[in-house]
Length: 75
Image (spheres, one colour):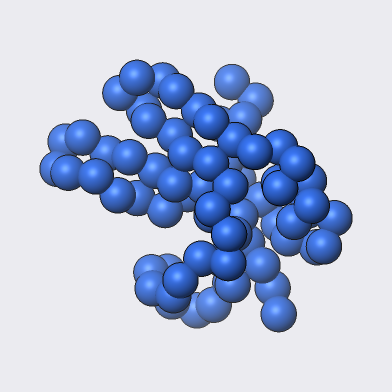
């Protein structure tokens, strides 16, 4: 079972809101319920909230962080 930590889009048209979720990696890009919600990102307000303890816990269990999320955490 491969776990991926990635962004999940929500919100309205032209007002995006992203949740940072841990989800099973599958062939389908969308669908499935997240195993855990680790934080959120609001690009219009440039606000990133992230529970680092939960993130480190999932990474220690073998979860992989998506490239987009890695780049977002660096900035």
